[in-house]
Image (cartoon, rainbow, N blue to C red; front, side, top):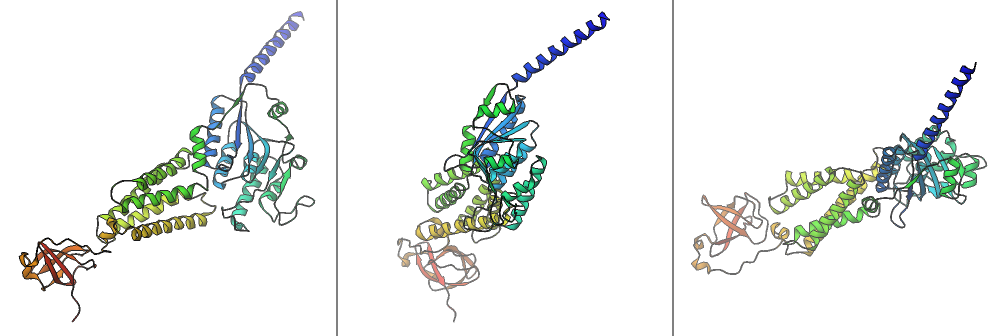
Length: 449
């Protein structure tokens, strides 16, 4: 009997030791604190923030953290970035907690709901998650988009064991909840109602209270965005993207139209690098859009400056630019596709306007001269009486090539280099030698008899 109690006592002490060791090991596991806040007047939920969330979750797994706590304070942001962040958090193989420190509106609702637990400050609120395409003047959002986002948030609420109807009412104005929300309005819950309807798990004033309610004990590690992630947040902001594209288009086309290399070229190249580099750092795309963009600009420059006429090279350049713009402007495969196409067409139209404005306000640019839009006036070199081609004066020939204004003509079976008086003469048209100046033969189009 004594032997039996001795064995039980030994097993008991072993269990105590194991529990102590495991508790000590758990205490050494850190808690990762991740602030997800808007940059005042600049950043919201966009791709730079998505890049930060991805890095934070990878860091938590590397450190074998107890949990990741996301401190949320946002007005919202991009739908595509929101869905990407939602997937990252929901699928993370680690405990996740949201602490709404003031507000989780629009995209912030999805981020909070993606976490296993949600806490909110007493003066906080959560809701108003209706999807918008970015056009503030549009009163009614696209019904298809609303339906898709509503399905997403209902499925997410169901997966997190919360009331799907509550969160659906934050997305869809048509959802009606008796005593809480009327039809035609969006639901936004203050802290006490959010707790009452179990949209959140608790109310906490500070970081310390959140940790106490969760029962976490261990070192706390606060992560902050790196300089590249902050830069990416700025460069991928919806208000900055069109500005960078306009500077890129304007600078590059003005540089093509002016001799040498100057400020427009430097501005265009810098804006292009910032635009595509920001999206690369944010993890939004690879270098393929940049390669297509450079290829498109290069092909258009070759078509305009080198190759006569407009053919397959110019068309290929336009196609490359269209593909590049589509790759960088698209959101998700489902949402706002029409808006992306319209935005892409708008930028192409602006690019054309910049080209035409530069063409007509810079009449001395090489493109103007190449298109034959001004008369080339050459200083008199020699008297036509002493020209070796004086016998050709008044003779009729045929344009063997396009004269724009320079080209080749044929008279009596012989070919001569010639120039027109600024007019565009197609190959095969009849020409008359109007003047000879030294070694230059100047022709005009032959009028019909």
